[in-house]
Every structure is written in C-alpha cells, then in structure tokens.
Amino acid sequence: MTTTLSKSHSSGGNPLGGQDTKRSPLTRLQHLLHSQATIGPAVVLLVAVIVFAVLSPRFLTPGNISLILQQVAVIGTLAVGQTIVILTAGIDLSCGAIMVLTSIVMAKVAADTGLPGLPALLLGFVVGTLCGLLNGLLVTRLKLPPFIVTLGTLNVFFALNLWYSESATIRGTDMPSLLLWTGQTINVGGTRITYGSIMMVVLVAAMAFALKNTAWGRHVYATGDDLEASRLSGIRTARVLLSVYATAGAVYALAAWVLIGRIASASPQAGQLDNLDSITAVVIGGTSLFGGRGAIVGSLLGALIVGVFRNGLALAGVDVLWQTMAVGVLIIV
Image 1 (cartoon, rainbow, N blue to C red):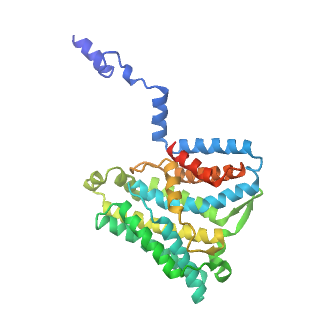
Image 2: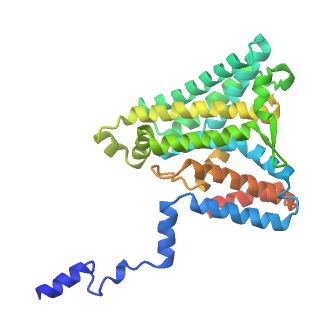
Image 3: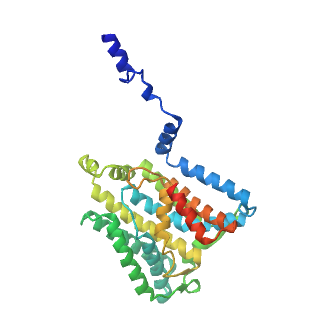
C-alpha cells in the first residue's frame, strides 16, 4: 500500500500516472508567448512585411522603408515612456499632450526670444519632466488611479498648449537648426534614415538595458507585479512610481524633439491621438496592462507593426477608414 501511494505521489499525485503534466502543443505555445513576450510581435511583424511585400512591389523600396521609419519614430519614442508606466500597472493618457506642449515650449521660446537651440531644448526637457512629475505626485501622494490622473492632466496640458501657443504654428524657419536636427537624414544602404529614428533605437536599447540590468529596473517590474508585496519587501514603491512618471515625462520631451524634426514645425494640433497610438504599440508589443510583464523591445515592434500595417494598406489602396479598422482588429487579435 505504501509503495502504491509513493508511486502515485511521484507521478504528481495523479492516479492516472501523471497525464495532467503532459501539456498540449497549444498550451506549450501559450506558455512560450507568455514567457517571451516579444516572440508574438516579432512573428506578426515578419508576416506583415512578407504579405505587404507580395501585395505591393513598392513596399520594400528604400524610399518607402525610410517613410515607415520616419512615421514610427515619434510613436516608438512615446511608447518607451508609456511602457515603463504600464509596467507599473499604470497608464498615461497625457503623453501626447505633454509631447505637444513641450514641442511648443521649445520652439516658441526660441522663436520669440532668440534663445539658442541648446537652452531651448533643455528647457523643453525640464517642462516634460515636470509634467511627468506632476502625474507621479498625484498618483503617489493623493493615491489617485493613474487613469483618472492622466485623463485630467491630458486636458490640462492640452489647454496650456493652446494658451501658450495662441493656437499658432511655429515655422521651422523661425527655429534654431538644432531643434530641426532630428529630421535630417543619413544614407544607410540606399535608405534615408533620420537622426530621430536613430535616437529612438538608441533610447530603446538604453531603457531595455536599464530595466534588465539595474536595481531600478527590477523594482519597476516588482512594483507592477505586486505593489503591496514590493512595499513589504523593502522597495520604496512610491519613489519608484515617482521616478517612472518623471522619466516618462523626459522621454516625451525627447519625442517632442523628434516630432519637430519630423514635421519641420511645432504645431499645437500635432499628435493629438498619439497617446492612443503609443498605448496601441505597447499592447501589441506584448506588455501586460496589469503590470509586471513586458519589454521595451516589444513596444518598438508594436510601433513598427502599426506603421507597417498602415503603410502597407495605403499602398494597397485601402481607404483610411478601413486602415483604422484593421489596426483595431489587430489590437484585439
């Protein structure tokens, strides 16, 4: 009798001999996708590129690849800041408004006062960081849900943007050349790549390294996974959250610099839906909205997927309405 129970226990306590430990191929695939969040987006991107390359001979031309990278640069940069917020089980609906407000501050202060490019750029980064810090203070000090906080500051920052800019666009010719530098291109294998796109890739690499190899990065994941358990284990969760929102604000300021170079101007109406596009990129990239799981590289892949889909559908002659619908279906899938 003892031998029988021992055998049963050694097979997982299953009288059928441990059959429940055998996982189906679908279960193993689900486990793989959950443990390696970037695999799914990478496969989707590869399939999308192959399909659109077959549908349109213009898709893989250097000029079109350059266009996709330029379109993705702003959203991809925003998605870096959005990712670290979502990793803490938060969300930032104000990222687009912070980006546009910061771009207006950079451009207008330089155009109106003759301030050189570097001080104007640094002032923009200060404003972006302070906006993110305000979000963080409201979340950590007043214990308000990030959704409510950033929904409110979305409107606050957008109103400040319209007030300060007087709803007027600042032309590129009125700005220092440094503010337009991110829109300049270099030739790589026949493809024109903007400095803004290169900055986005460098930012992704730097943030991925910080999240994986620093104590701060591990604390970000732990805070998003279980806030109370992290606090009880000695992690200063409020300080971590505050640093995340402030860092995100600085990243949005970098996106503002990329945006100015992208459109060669600073418009108070630019990027109004970029907050939703950044969330789209993060979600498609495999980061969990419940926090604690995801990767910056996945968000970059998500931004590229959205850019490839929209570009490929446009080349295929699909109406903008159906392009938007296709992205919505992609998010759900």
